[in-house]
Image 1: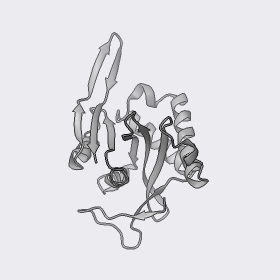
Image 2: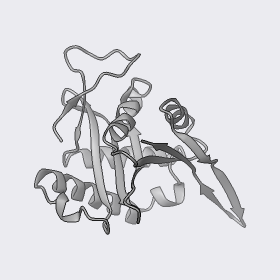
Image 3: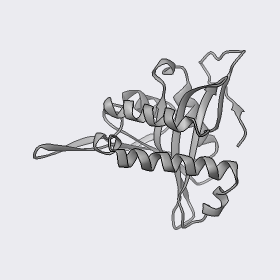
Length: 195
């Protein structure tokens, strides 16, 4: 995937440095992990998963695998109906990373592909400027016929829910919290868009 210039309807982009969506680079992993941790603190991600060092290490490894798969062509080794493949993309303006997304692609038994946007982060200074929308649209535009794109949102992710609703995603279930003694378990809402 080469860098792609994007124009978000209703959003102004700089003529000098328009937004670009491209494969992530190794230095984007730290940006991504920092933003995921920040989002988890605000409960935009399920807290018991996102704060764990083990999960952060696994996320870093998945990001690195996605980068290497794209750069050296190793991704085709994992593209099979039996394997899940990851995509790690970023939005840049010039050399600055504004947002990132980690998504996985699964193939169902009938051959239908599902792209799941697992993490989507936008640096706080660039929110409500079309960065998140550019990332979601990227997955929609690259979806094949008969496939679907899905995303999960916690109850606190009102902005993401509004964005998904505006891009024709349908909510298949609402976010809920389940108290269990001293611990509360959070189940995110599921949003689906079908091509």
